[in-house]
Each structure stands twice: as C-alpha cells, then as structure tokens.
Length: 398
Ligand code: PLP
Ligand code: TYF
Image 1: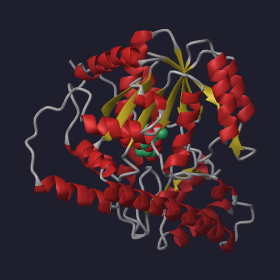
Image 2: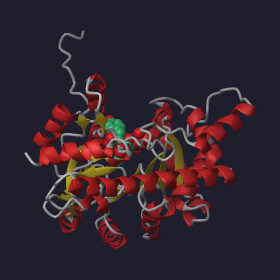
Image 3: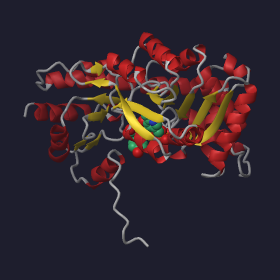
C-alpha cells in the first residue's frame, strides 16, 4: 500500500525547530519560528489566561460536544473584537463567525467554502507570504499565484506592483491579504494605501480574505483592526481569519475563528449553514478549553483590561528589541544602515541576509532564522541580542 509513498519535504519553518533542538551549541538562539518569548527567553503564560483558567476551574463544567460553530459567547466576542461590538454588520447580524482550530483552521474553513462557491477562481497570495497560505489554498483545490509585495532594493512594499497585480486579476479572484504585521517581511501598507487596495478590490470584484494572525502586535488592537472597518465601509463581502495563538500566547490550544461578512442577516444564516457543513465534515466541532478561556478574558472587563496590558507589553518589548538589534549591529561594526529593522512591524524582520549568510549563521553561530532571511525579533531578549548582533556582523563582514 505504501511502497510508492514519497517522503514529503519538511515544513521550512517548523523543520528548523527540530534542527535547533538537535544543535549542541550552548549559545544557540532560535529566531526561526514565529513565537513570542519574554525577556527571560520563556514562552509566556499570560496572567489573564491564568486568571480565566482559575475562574473556569472554580465552577467545573462537563465537556459535552460544542455546537459545530463553537461557543456562542466566543463567536460573539470575536465579532466584537474584529468588527467592533456596535458596528453595523454585527448589530444587523450579517456576520457569520465560527470558532476554528487556530488561524490555520479559519483559513482552511474559508478556503473549502470558497472552493465550493467558485472552484475555478484563482487565489493570489503576497510575494512572499506565509508559505502555508499557498499550501492551504492549493489543498482546497485552488490554483495559487502571487501578487507583487516585497521590494528588496527599496526595503519596503512594491505598492505600485501590488496594485498592478490586483488590477490585472480576473473578477472573482481571491486575494489573501495580511491585515497587519506582514509575515514574513514585517512591512505593512499604510491606511491610505489600504484605501487604494480596497478601491481595486471593489472595482475588480475581487474577494478579499484578510488573515489577522497578529492583531495587537503592530500599533494596537484597535489600530491593527481598523483595516477591517475600511473593507466593511466599502460595502464588501469579506473573509477574516483570526488567530489568538500569538496574542494570547495560546499556541497549543488552537484558538482561532473565521468571520464572513454577508449582505444581510438572512444571507449570513445561509453562509453559516455552509461553514458548518465544512466543519462537520472535517472535525465535527471545535475543542472546548481554549475558546472558553479566550471568551472569558474578552468578556470580563478586568481580564480584558489585563489582556490589553499584557499584549501591549509584548508589542513594546518587540519594538525595544528592534532598536537594540539596530544599535547592536552598528556597535558590532556593521557599516550598512540597518535602521530599516525599526521601520518593520510585528514579530518578524526580513533582514536582507542571503540564504548562504543564514546557513552560516546557523552552522557557525547556532543562530536560526529561515533561509529567506526572516528572523523572529520576538525571540530576542536582553541576554541573547548582543550575541546575535555579533554573529550577524561577522556573517555580513564575509
Ligand atoms: N497566518 C499567518 C500569517 C501566520 O503567521 C500564522 C502563524 O502561525 C497563522 C496564520 C496561523 O495561526 P495559528 O497558529 O493560530 O493557526
Ligand atoms: O511563520 C511562522 O513562523 C508562524 C508559525 O507551518 C508557523 O506563523 C510556521 C509554520 C507553520 C505553522 C505555523
């Protein structure tokens, strides 16, 4: 049965974790996978999460099956967070939101539903993008292509190219857009540029699928979410995937969601019924714990306040690390201007280092980033940043 089964390639990012774990170098630093660590190099367990778990344990509940679309209080909390509790699409009931297995699950549910609607549509992802975008939409049956995004020479977004790609896309094309904190480059477009993207999406009848895996890591929870309001104001039917893996440091609980904005309440009910078919035929219904914790935090004012503070602290610490990195590289003798790293936003920095330089960083210094030159700034801390700067400086100096 399995004699002809080929060995699949490792995930280029998650595969680095295995290589890192096997590396005997005592100074090794893992800047590969996109995970936030605190200044002691530890994966945080947020205070708000601990408090919510304690409160949930004080009144233990049996674990029946959840509804197919998840915990109602969770779905409502996601709607309020993503669109605003008083936003018209929410109050008029035209948003269909389902709990999902992480942001990945939200993308997959949306991809499967879209494929049923329009199997011949093309999907465009940014060039470059989180590689799983391509895999998820291809596995859902779509042909996936890219829209221009990163401009290496300019160290920023090739915005004209992006608009041009979207303009020349056929009507019905699905455009996967990073709502904030672009993975892997760290370069976002400005609010004014979003307005131009929205114009093209509307004029060209494209379907916008916004991936929001880092809400709160850019400029703030509301600031990062504002782009969703812009699409809604333009009267578009959009897809939004949400992930709480990073913003709640709940990676392993797999908490996410998919929200679809329909034209009215009746249409949203039909859309929801189809999303539920996708879920039922994949995994039936979502798990209880992570969704219950996030719902508790988002709907309890004191915990919500605590979450905003803790997420704010993560955001501020990453920004401080960007500055330390730039200062440290200069102090280590790097001639070229690395200040672009402080203009990038979110967890990642496209460092501009070549594949060869990244391989040397790994083999000679035990500093792990992706082959594409992406490093996770959120894994730097006061103890390892100096070493990382020395290592990068040596590699850059040839
Ligand atoms: N989308 C992007 C851009 C990501 O970087 C990630 C990271 O994991 C995800 C989606 C998936 O989120 P999750 O881990 O919640 O499935
Ligand atoms: O880009 C990252 O590092 C995160 C984590 O298949 C991740 O988004 C990486 C690869 C993957 C799943 C999650």
